[in-house]
Length: 205
Image 1 (cartoon, rainbow, N blue to C red):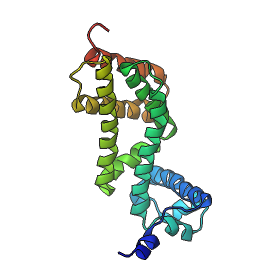
Image 2: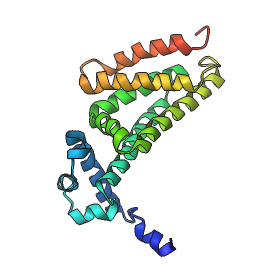
Image 3: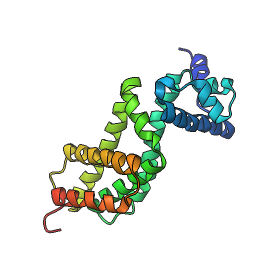
Image 4: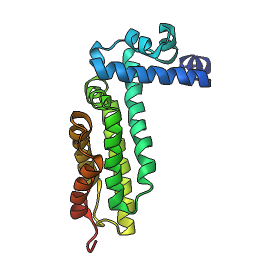
């Protein structure tokens, strides 16, 4: 492919206005797919929700699959960007996991559509689905490794522990973020964190 062809295929917004339009389309896609699912959701439904002309959609995305894939990546990034700064304020490695779950519960309660979208991605775009969880687990594993180096958690923590904690968080988010958000998120996070502390907390804590 020539440089000219590559430039033609590049749909990255080049202006602030273009970025706002693309963001509006992704937000509309979250609402469309969150409400109707991937198969019943439509490009016309997305553009109506976004208040954009149909041509604007094709300026930034090629197909419905294309925007769905971008949406999965975008929502994964939104979770990361919401949770990471809050974790940075943790007292130690154990507290970081409490804050991580608490922040995720808060995010899930205001973005309930994330579960339907991520779950459907397993069948619409398996690579994006896998990347979402692998990237999340990788960040958690790195966090646990750093905590072990500081003596906050057991020295033998590894990838398995990261996936186990992530799995717990995913289902707690579903139960107490999406299905029923009446129980205080701080209480749920504290109960789960007690399990983590007893399981991987450093001896003598």
